[in-house]
Image 1 (cartoon, rainbow, N blue to C red):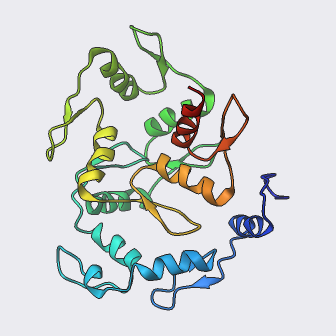
Image 2: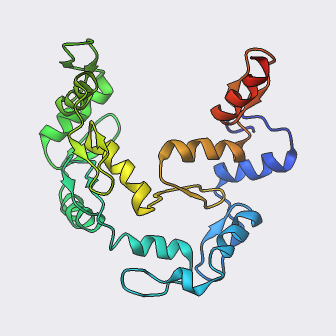
Length: 245
């Protein structure tokens, strides 16, 4: 690829990859208008819309034109804790987060001169600036690890103490911070907020999406130190290494 330098073993794989850079999405769904990079991705999307029964909202009964529209609609009912990135405030649901963020869009006069991101107050901007300066004033007394924010330090310290104050109301499993609990709850709710731009497949974790995207890019970052063979997934490398044990 002349744009990013990645290499592929087939010309058509390179051609599909190039559309990530160009933004070209020639395959369009006639039902909902969503466009995809490949015909195969469109087919996967359309297969999910074959049964009208599966596209009915379990909360209110409304039938959506496609599975992606249904997923977006379900957010209006989801009772999943969310955190507002600009200010760090935690909300009990996605709808409350959306209402809260409208206040940010009106007046965010404090802008970062480095990246242009805007904030509602100078204190939020001050915390953000530490991400550029590398300043980490909060230090763990046990291991010395340093953090830009006090809240990050508190979450880290729970690793040493074994404290898990954030409890899942569904299964009772405990976590050391609210973020891990929020990600865990997706197992019970079925929420999959991370979508692959290439094929439309969705995931409940960001790292799962990242690993999946390597199928499309041809990237194989996990290499066997015995024979040099590379794999897209770490688990495949581990299975491969069993032959050398």
